Amino acid sequence: MPTPRSLRVAAILVSAVVLAGCVAGEDPTPSVPASGTATVAPTASPTASPEPELHPEGTAADNLPLFTAVTRRVWASGDAESGRAYVDALVTAGFEKSAMQVTADRSTIGNTAESLQFSVRWGEDCLVGQVGESTGEPVTVILPALSDGSCLIGQTRPIDW
Image (cartoon, rainbow, N blue to C red):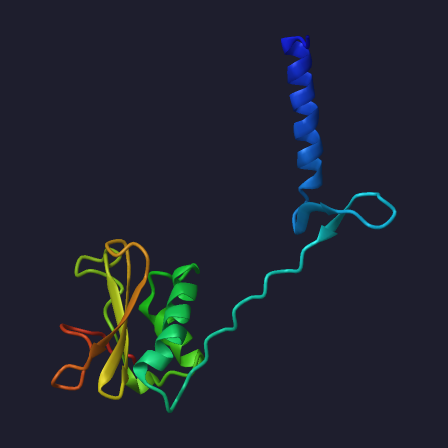
């Protein structure tokens, strides 16, 4: 009958063998060639989904994936609290700067805004993004344009750069 100590040693050895076979980027499932020797076959890298593209003749819904991807990319960067960073990244992605609005980065007393909104007017619709401490993760939606043609309610800042 095995002793508790010998069972622990056996468990440690089995764990070590299993962990040794778990190499990053490789499938730990062994394949057995005709020679009978087990080998570890690497798995193919997962195919990255293609970067969304701008569809100039498309709808707001066609362009929401790109708007969302750009928003998430800026949010993950060091410029997450900068309205200019979102505007500049959207322009780089092909959106028209003259169709954009953005709210202030700072509150009236100079603190970082709890919520930052930005938008791109697309036909009768608006691609709207919201980020900030009060939002948590970035939010992107399509909303109808307001009756005055704008996308955001309230005061926005000039996009003069």
